Amino acid sequence: MKKFFTTIKNIFSIEDLRIRILNTLGFLLIFRLGSYIVLPGVDPNLLAGNQGGIFDLLNTLLGGSFSRASIFALGIMPYISASIVVQLLTVAVPHFTKLQKEGESGRKKINQITRVLTIVITAAQSYAYLRATINSEAILNPGFFFTLSSIIILVSGTMFCMWLGERITDKGIGNGISMLIMIGIISRLPAALFQELETKGMNGALLSIIELLILFIVVVGVIAMTQATRRIPVQYAKQVVGNKLYGGKRDFIPLKINASGVMPIIFAQALMFIPPMVAGIWRDSDIGSYVGATFADFTSWQYNVVFGLLILLFTFFYTAITVPSNDIAENLKRNGGFVPGIKPGRQTADFIDSILSKITFPGAILLAIVAILPAFAVRLGVTQNFAQFYGGTSLLIMVGVVLDTLQQVESYLLMRHYEGMMKSGRVKGRSQFAAA
Image (cartoon, rainbow, N blue to C red; front, side, top):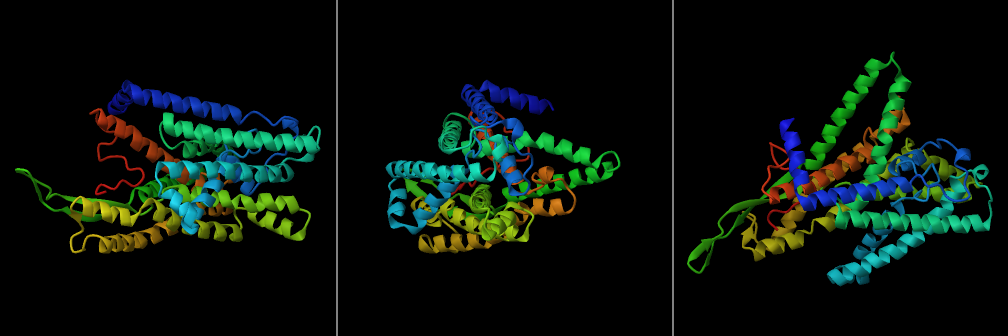
């Protein structure tokens, strides 16, 4: 306990880190306050309660702003959808691939395209949201003006959330977009836990303890999966510079079993919100009714099959983007490093690719299993709100974001020659290539 308080003291004694933490808390407070501001022309007392299924899951990710018809009702989700589309274009369309390789100028152009696409997607999702989720009794003056003004406000709210996320990344601590999603999830946890305990009552006290124990095991398993790495040994050749001898050391490349982190879950979840919302526009038709009912129920086998396949796809896709084997091999060759028994250059890149494929597949399977655990929890009698934290998107996002944030905090501590946060080793976040 003494070490814990000493670490907290060290954290706030570093001025830059202290300012970043306070900035992050301030931006998150603004985000939470905005989630309680209801759209003009909507009576919050007449809004429908729990809609069930995927809408409850979306409500959890957005911290309740979805069900409150808030100006932040769509949150950051349209921006994530736009990012998915743009990243797919950088792989499939030569023009976008060229932009990605142009450095800072290309990155700015891609960001601008992403923002414009975010506005288009938000406008479409806003119309679907107004049609599918807000009951007509809650709208005081329905009509064209209400629809148009609400769409403009919802688009502005999403763009403001995107701006907050960028400010957190630049001026705060951690990844801003992921941080906004995590704070929305955590805000729903106390109420969900209380509801679960209240539902079970005193007669179900033992069952509640068992549920919490299983939840603890799941959390430990997710952390282990997030931290697991496959180390590729690297040997650096000796070089003579002037009268001194450099190199000759051994190192390794740590390839994570889940190198893509939480992003495949966020990407897949963002796409899974689209079918029920679009189907809501044609809810009077048989096809629209069927699609809406099927994909609004996150416990249905159709939803979980599609969700799992999307996670597998995005895990491989995002890993290929974030772990460029050709660049790693080129960096090793340029710095005089090589993998023992493997020729530098192309063969090293192929070797890294083969190892990455072997560890990414089981990692993607585990990620998909954890992602659909809430559906099994609901089937076994756990209340739906608490089941969202039993695995799935909520737990993976919280674990991933917390580990990434702790890693950044520890980096500040180690840079200022303070003791790290863990006695048994450094906190591991996203992939760090020691050899690159």
